[in-house]
Length: 160
Image 1 (cartoon, rainbow, N blue to C red):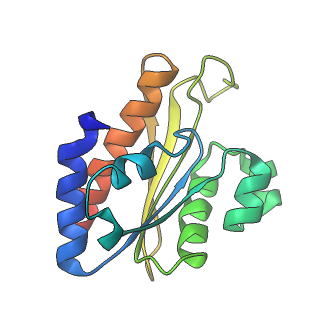
Image 2 (image 1 turned 120 degrees about the vertical axis):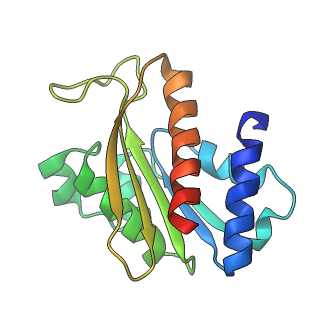
């Protein structure tokens, strides 16, 4: 997690200074965001918890993402990533949430959603999540690492 250390330290300082805590809801990254955050000493001051909700059932059971929403839009969608961020906040006392869902590959692509398609959402308690679509290149590891780096930077930008 050394490659994320500078980003995590900046994010942690912003959260610590503001007295806020973070929750992560992850699908395609499989816990990499939470692992990056907790790889630095003192992260218990600002990292509250992480949800790894890889399956559709996990998204529904752990985060309260409605199954009909997943059926209508697919797990890799703006609607679902927004619901994941809102669900993470609803199921934790954290102030900020980050959520990611995507197709890291090499399989899983569907029409309109090629490998490397990732949806990212950042949410502050009380506000609507801000979501954006990423189209990333590289193999599975590269997509997951790029997603983690972009998520950490997006959080830092949102909190600053």
